[in-house]
Image (cartoon, rainbow, N blue to C red; front, side, top):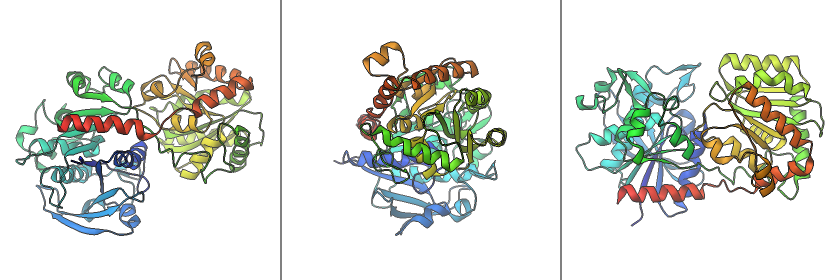
Length: 481
């Protein structure tokens, strides 16, 4: 029998994206379907999602639950053919602004909005009133986490639940009063339930009630069982360690392919690395930087937050330019960080280029045109840009943590000799550690033969979703047996 899996998430490329979760939701279900699993995606009906659907059909009316309003369930398809369910609930989702925030502030009714996502997911894993019922419910991050509680307290037989933590720093914490308002029974409010230091925690619901828990990398799965990366939940995670699995995420190797990427000035691969220079010059022109093949060009494509260590990049930027080197930054985030990068670009207009905002095409060109990619994250559940960088022959300099440890082989005499080195680790993850890693990278850059070995080793690595999809399929089968 074909296993039926519902993949519930708050965002999914190409319909709506704020971060890596959208990339995972856009690629993993398709990879699972290639393994002959009947995987379907569930998304909230934000305006961009509804507007992008070429065809949609009404499937069911889902009645209100406590203060969670009624919703219509629509059927559609993602552009790659993956079946899609969309929650059409205008009072919660029909609004301008982002999926989670408006003007930098969380929507005040986010508890209701994402309880709706969780309870519709649970409905499809219990009642299945659309002629299809999930055999496995795969909930992603805090936004969908309450679905595990709805399943746990459902009077109906329910599918087993797999909960994926993409970033434990975001926990979905709300006032205790929401517990009853969202239709959860009093039994849910306990230290062994959804209660977390007097708050209702959506992420704890997922961790507490799921049959299996996954993270985006094996190292992150280990790290969150202890402080500080357990974010206060390390005790629960350690207690549930038998159910906790680290599965390294993949990337969409069709979208991220330097041989066929339409955003590039020139296609290239490991056998035509000289063509990468055309992308470097295009990137320099785009930002008004001095066009120079010899000067190393560093890049950042990131949320501009402390987690990503971008303050460390600000701290070393002046020294970087004096090396000499160039720096391109593409991202959005904390206003203070944005202002600091803008100030650097204003002071060094021919050496530093900054684009505040998200631009998918520019992100692709940046990965292709840069020589080195800076990602000194203080913690990183998985990370995707370090994988994109390696695929594009751009050597990553990464914090020695989480998925960065699992996906980038640090350059040493031994790894350079055996051909496995693909980047550089920042140890310790502070300004001094970043300076040291940059110095090592620049020394390698000035030795073209070694540099090309690094580039080609990264480009040869398999970061496709096929490996991860196989591991998820095996875990689905295990919890549904």
